[in-house]
Image (cartoon, rainbow, N blue to C red):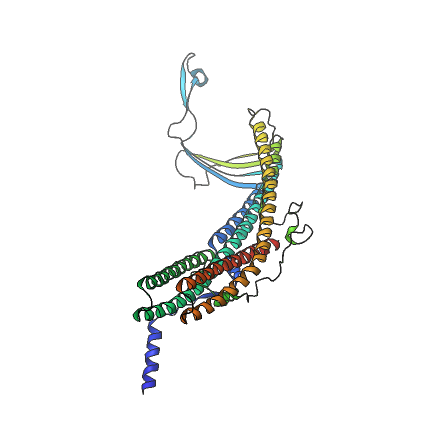
Length: 455
């Protein structure tokens, strides 16, 4: 009976408390893929690129034949009047008779068509629209690239604050153990109030560090959730294996080289740029050159064909639906040739401005190449140096962990003083921080280089 009551109680509790599903991220690659799928800024950028695609369609449509229906309704509330010599109507010479022209109501309906036979400017508009479309796509790739870098940094920041919390909890547990021993010794009169206060002060400082790390973890996790576009994201506990060097993503040997003929050490200043940032600059340079061509082609003549047919009804009363009344047709077709002669130097200034913009775009491309290569070299140097330091700091970390266990035993046994314990404890804290900082540098810079090497 007791078992049944307990099961019912558990069932009621589970139904009364909603269970929220969580997205567990196992590694940094999963975080990046999730961001590519859900990030709202990236989705907006993709939609903007789709708009550019429709701009290409619109530019191509301007070169096709155009046909439109035109209609107009006119109400002449005051009709024009002309004086006519009266002698035309049998009157006396020198006299005039006023004649009113037209009717109050006019309705016109017709079709009008235009065909651009030769218009270099319209053709160039298509090329410019295509260039803008390419820029829109590349802007999305650049945003995706920047997003991958941001996610990598936030992911590792979150994981390593988790690791700081784990280490700080262990440090706090060790200090609690010391505090209990000190409290017992104080009651027996073996130590004075000063040593007791120092132990308590150390414990409070470590507890404060723990709270600071917990706050940092929550902030990093919240930022990671915003970037990946999922408010339920948490990092996998398996990521903590990085601390012991058991993580599969931790490289034992440098996977990247500074050698100019290998890996990322090669020069990125090539004719064919595959990096999104450089591709974007190259596309902007191409757009600037197309703008120069457009301004130059605006100086060329244009030729188009047109045709127009309309019918007009004129009434003294609003009876346009009376088809027994006459409608009068008007039809015209022809060619229109236009050649610019003088435009107040507007076109000359447009060409000069476009050429300057093209020069600027060229310089921006060259500058972006140099900056990208310099950044890559800096990442390589930092990564390789961090990897070398990691071997040293890992060994130092392990030795200090052993020292911590030994000093705890000796202090509990009364062999060492608190000052001696505190010295070793501070050395352990320093070794922990150096190891984690170096490990973070290796993981972050290694992932950033991996992203760059994927192009």
